[in-house]
Length: 294
Image (cartoon, rainbow, N blue to C red):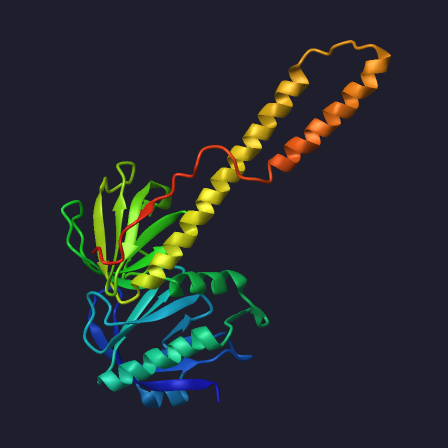
């Protein structure tokens, strides 16, 4: 049986914004098509007629509960192409059941394209969506927004996404522009510098996942510092090579010529070995706030 779940729901019209009663079916991938949500006028129509609308889930990101601007007991299915379909159930239990089966489909099974090959781009996008932490941005004098949102730690930035619209990015902060960051049992806090789009200021997020967010930020910051150190060493090595290449050749007696080449080779080997040891100015890493600071 291809049908994983079906039932009567109220689907929100994308054109008029009103909720209309319909019969919804969730079908898994088969020879008849990919993962999909099929909408019918009623239960009887589902038995004798084709669907009125079909939403293919081969590009689905995830399912949301209690999305912004929707009814209670609602479920939103968001896709990578920007399509968002919202439907409301008759009870919280039904809404949770729909959300659970949709999430199981995303996490436990592979959405196929064509003849069932895994879509690696979709898998990466799903993983990116799943790595967003639910937080509550506390009011700040530097921002006009606050409330529930999702925090994402990218390799070079901290992104803040709208919890109701997963494709809407609210703010971004470069990790290299952070002055300090810290956490406690229920908060994560960082101080942004002047070069950030929001300007300088202290931003606090209420979340029980403060430790996880802190570890992600700390690991990304250290990775940036290591990369900067490697680039600095490469530039220094290139500068030394250019100076040696542009140095005027000195005509040496033959007896001293081979000694000069041997000594030059030894010096180069010593320089290459010395590059393996970090040197130069210390890395400018953001300071960590005390664990008790909010």
